[in-house]
Length: 266
Image 1 (cartoon, rainbow, N blue to C red):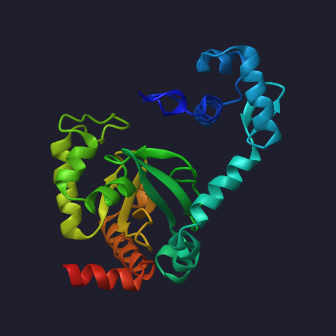
Image 2: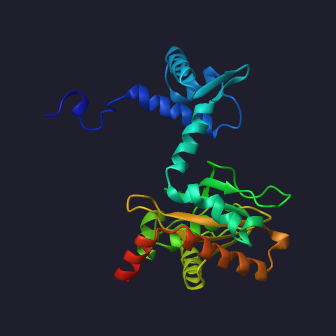
């Protein structure tokens, strides 16, 4: 019978688990959190929470302010290092700047994290209005253009397995798709068209256009390349122009050897 750290269900490093949970609490917070609040959320003694905070502060992972604790600068460095390990993220900015269409658009790269699209990189473009989602933030994959681009690269069976047959999606706006059949219909349209579309379904006032971006190496996760357009400026001609430019940019960011391998399999 397994004993000690080998016992089923046993946490091999409880302190590490609590530290990760604490960082998650700070990431989700809208402002600094006090030691008392963190201890209550972690359901551990205040003294233990203080020790965690001291260790994380020494590592630059959290910072202490007069109002409590917040994430430290080291977390930003790690987030940047995570994104930079993917070849496409490193090349992304040059590809956007080289595109006559995309150089003026807000373009982002996202990865699938569970049922969410997580945003990794951002090319600001020339829009005077700040659009899209901040780096490190996430939106439901079923509602956002980048998320749908990630899902459209999967067979419907995988989409259903990921989201659940009875999935209901949050009403982020009045245009949000709420149920799986509606999403699957939109994914079918996206596959035939070549790019996914979000018409103010995830963010009011923003129309999203996105395409799948296969991983560069076999062990890299698939990504999505998407643009955010102010809804008042999102006529179909512009949407189609941006969609085609994204398809071309994704082609420039795709490993030619991997593309040839996929073509041979098809």
